[in-house]
Image 1: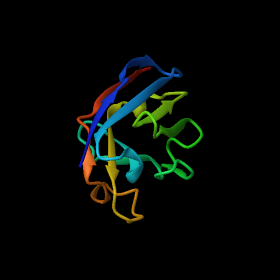
Image 2 (image 1 turned 30 degrees about the horizontal axis):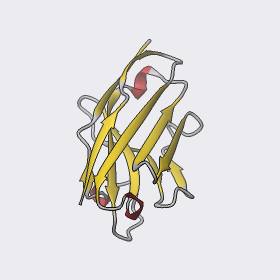
Image 3 (image 1 turned 120 degrees about the horizontal axis):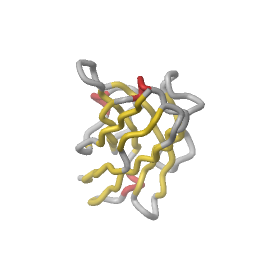
Image 4 (image 1 turned 45 degrees about the vertical axis):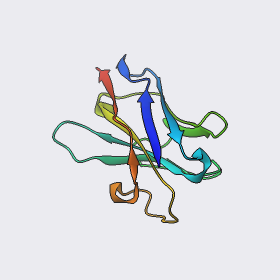
Length: 125
């Protein structure tokens, strides 16, 4: 089992940047494929980005491709989400999540077994 804690959210103007961090504790972090999701008020939780166990493969939602970068440091048990050129529509609670099984449906909420508590990102226009 792994525990996940996000940090780094806040209020930023459109066009600005934020870096989210997700610190993991518990089992060996490199066992887990990791993802970032977000949920805006009144909307379903949606996929943002995914990174493989080694960090060698990354995937993004079309809405953030070219603006966001997911990365991980297995020595520090941390996954990051660098968010640049932020837009008001990026406003949401951002969650990190992980799983240790061998599935590949990384864009779906159901694929992930472990979730953090979320961190609020607000982008003002």
